[in-house]
Amino acid sequence: MKKRMKKILKCLRIIVLIVLILLLAYIIYLFASYHRIPDNQPLQVEQTKESISSGETLTTEKEYSALTYNIGFGAYTPDFSFFMDGGKSSWAKSKESVKKTVQSAGELVASKDPDFALIEEVDLNSTRSYHVDEYSILKETIPSYNTVFAQNYDSAFLFYPFNQPHGKSQSGLALFSKYPVTDSLRRSFPVSTSFSKFFDLDRCYSISRVPTDNGKELVIFLLHMSAYGNSDAIREGQIRMLSQDMQKEYEAGNYVLCGGDFNHDLKASTDDTDDHESWAYPFPREELPEHFSFCIDQLSDTERDTLWDSARNADMEYIPGETYTVTLDGFIISDNIECLQYENVNTGYSYSDHDPVYMKFKLLDN
Image (cartoon, rainbow, N blue to C red):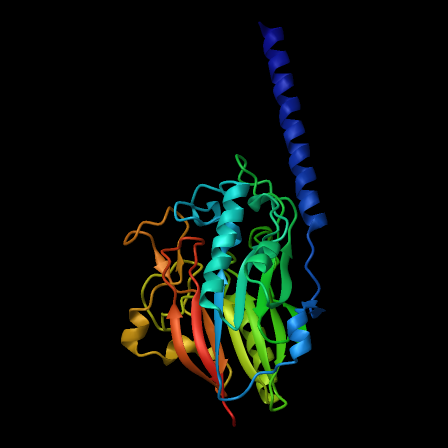
């Protein structure tokens, strides 16, 4: 009996030792493979033949439209919940579901026919979305647009949760423009340097330039700010960096349109005392540079309060009236742009945990 117990204990020690070695090897792999995509990276602009031949530029005092949409890597059907929000799943339901959901999101964008579409969480080759190239699906679904892709992150294999490891992710931001984009640049946001960087991953924004007929440029900032870091320093650093770049463009005489997923509660004021989710703090308006404002702030109190929330919490399936919802998505504009119409499109979160935000605007002839 004693011999048998000794053998069992010896086997258990060997198993524990093997597990510890594997865990150590994985931690070494995580840190060794971690890298950030370089800052100030020039981005490739894919121009359509029609755009190149027409040479059309933007005109002041003319109506244009823009839409921003976080498509949630094609996973978030209304019944989907995500493990990092306290939900169940780490991957989308299936490869077929991802393709169908991304195509449906693309068709929704096409139905609004925006001059500019700013789309976030577009996977290129990720475990969580069955390695579906979602950017290609969008380009096929929203044709005849000039496109720019900024890769947000290229993560190591995340072996968590253990029942369905999140795996490796390649994802980013896609700009679709009916007008020629002459130049585009990727800027790297400051992110966490602690162990949480393996969960929040990399963050960036793209800066794309569209010529206007008065010699200026419409400079489009497409962003996706941090959500899971829950760090005041990181939030402040990201807003400060973004503000400095926007101010620089305004001082150069350009028009600035900034859109995307801000991961801040855009309806709430900074002094709002209500409880907020850790990923939905009020955006500190006082940090915006002079001459800039959120389009949502140009609505009346009634219009803003009754505006459909652009995002839902993914800790559970979407149940109207029960699931926590908040407005995370929107646009910042410089004061040489006039917002003519503003709408959070209500689909009931059919194709993502976000719904699109749509606006019409014109460039002022100052």
